[in-house]
Image (cartoon, rainbow, N blue to C red; front, top):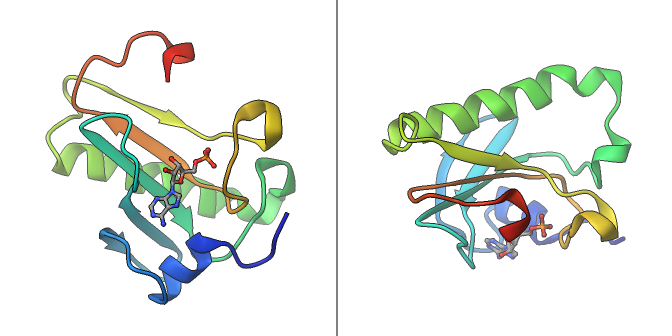
Length: 116
Ligand code: AMP
């Protein structure tokens, strides 16, 4: 589980990503391998490796991540039809990048949750 993942580099502008939102706490950018017409990753600017590492002090940060995701869904016009938010944790959860991130998926019917 490396320190300083590709997402930390994206947050700092060291690696290119299609960033669609950034503030002091959060960065959102398009997934490089989109699984739906809209596939955005919303990440905290500081690395938290997995959901298992979240602590009480992160409560506002996680709330902000959800609020930002919903705002993006509304701005992109997919909120009314609906969308899916996913956070993967560790191997069985399918986590590939060890810097927590919320997937925002939408823009088409997404089917069963196990199909994604
Ligand atoms: P997860 O399996 O939940 O860890 O998801 C990691 C996601 O990060 C995958 O959907 C990848 O396509 C995406 N990803 C990996 N590298 C990049 C990158 N450089 N820019 C944008 N998305 C990326």
